[in-house]
Each structure stands twice: as structure tokens, then as C-alpha cells.
Length: 173
Image (cartoon, rainbow, N blue to C red; front, side, top):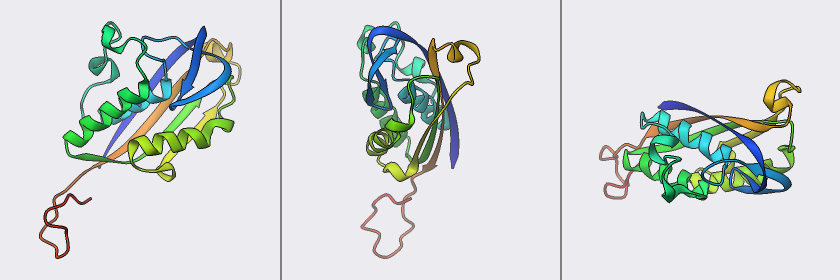
């Protein structure tokens, strides 16, 4: 088993929609960024890539590359999952903390867990999302933006060892 830690932060920007964990949060300024600015997806990408020693979100999806301009960050996350699978790893669980004064994260947690659980192929029971404030301190406390911490646990997928009924060489955990 391997663990990765991810972090991302963005400033709020008027005129953009706010997307966190693949869920659009209405009536709130969005996040500045080259892609759609989904800081939850970006932190998860860093955690997953870090767990397998595969760099970070910027090395795979450089902000100066026009291919990723306004990209759907859930598509970027899907690509990172594909990289893990290509290296013979599966996701066990992920844990995400969104740090912000606004918006309130609680009302959107169930939708984020479902969306992320589906994309990661682990289901919502293996995805934790929680919101915390910064108690009014610093740039987050001043409501200039938000930050996200993510942790991912991954495990190598192993070939069966000739156990009867294994499905003829199918991959097993």
C-alpha cells in the first residue's frame, strides 16, 4: 500500500462558476485557474500521482498548455486514475478537506462523495469530504479563496496465484 498527499489553492474570481469535486455550487464566485479551477480534483490528482511517484498535476497538465485551458478537472482526474491503473494500482480510499469561510461545504458533501466515488470506481463509502473554516485568519479567512488537502491510499493490483475459481487470470486485489 502507498499513500499520497495533495494540496491545491485558488483565489475566487467573479464571472466563473464554482466547481468543487465535480459539483457546481451555485450563487458563488468560481475559482481562478487555467482549467475550471476545481481545487478538490487538483488536490486529489496530486495525492494519487504522489502515491505512485508520478509527479504532480502541473507536470501532467501544465498551466501554460492550451490543451488544458478551461479543461474539466474531472477529466484530468480521470486521466490520473488511468495512469495509476496503467501502473497496476487501484485506489483504496481518499480523504479530502476543503478549507474556506465560504461557501458552506456541508450541503454539497453527499454530491461530491457520489461524483468522486463514481469517477474513482470506489463508491462514495470510500470517499470522505469535509469542510473546515480558517477561523477568519489569513487570505482564506478574508474570503479571498480556498484551499484543499487530500490524502489517497492506493494498493498494487496483484495477479491471482492459481487459486481455483480465479476467473482464468483476472486481476485481483
